[in-house]
Image (cartoon, rainbow, N blue to C red; front, top):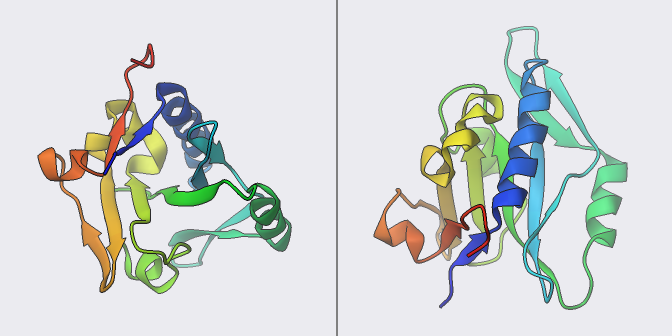
Length: 156
């Protein structure tokens, strides 16, 4: 089993997107696909919103759903969802109720502080892996490193 190695630039691009959403006090979401060309970040059209009580969320629009459907070739697969939260990184009840990916081995990456947490790399994020029973947390360390890691800036 080979871990999903995310290129440094992919993490930079994701962080920049989440931080841009965060400057408006909003969450963002994206998908990571894998195929012959390696991992790629797909940012679909989405509608972030804030409730009257101040809660924030994000919903992929119908156009965004179509973008995601068209983003895959026959040799590619979405392997992870990456999204931001306003404060701490954790899998919320809304995340559990709306898993987006349901295949065994799928990953869910939650970036804290409207994307700012990604500046510290994946260790600052919550990472969960889907198994037969649901989402299982992967704390930083050797157990997580079996499934996912960030590549250094030079890609080596």
